[in-house]
Image 1 (tube, rainbow, N blue to C red):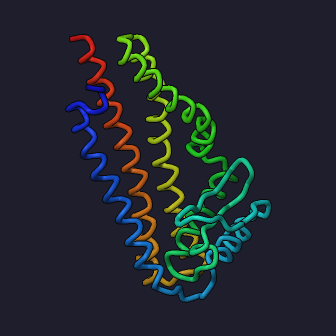
Image 2: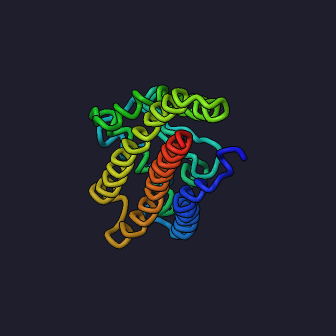
Amino acid sequence: MPFFYDQTFLILIPGIILAGYASWKVRSTFGRYSEVPSGTGYTGARVAMELLRRQGITDVKIEPVQGALADHYDPRTKVLRLSPDVHDGTSLAAIGVAAHEAGHAVQHREGYAPLALRSAIVPVATIGTNAAWILFIIGAIVGSTRLMDLGIVLFLGYIAFALITLPVEFNASNRAVALLQGQGFVLPQEAQGVRAVLNAAALTYVAAAAMAIFQLIRLVVLRRMSDD
């Protein structure tokens, strides 16, 4: 029986459950606060633009991107992309997500070390992850423990990327809440809703890191089984 169908698959179940819960949590929380209008009535795009301007950042372009919750900041091109519900939305959820992405732009301007490190290892982590699975599977099929070991080593690059992502995302969320409150874009009673949305979003990154660790554990277990 192929290794990916054996009993070690049970190792991944906690990660799968956590990932499913995180996905449900972020969508339900975003949906809830998408129905709560912000006091200012500003769109997510305008909030992001104003926050960046007040931080002295004028070289970041803000543009819409298709896809639900596809919001992100690209430090390579200095483009902040917001999904339609965020770009044009005036809810607490919309301005919270927009401020979070603006927080990444502020990180970039300030040279925030974890963001710089994450950006630097993206190509290596992406290539390494794909190669890791290919090498490990081939090694398992042909009985080459060296290929399996190499696959595990390469997979560590993805683990590093997932772990580095955590402080980047949590810091951006903290910046978002502080900026929104400090610049008067949310009232004190609205900040709780913004935090709820951003905390739910952060849980998806925690789930991704946990799943990566469970996958690594499974690979190590499979590698040891190959010696038996």
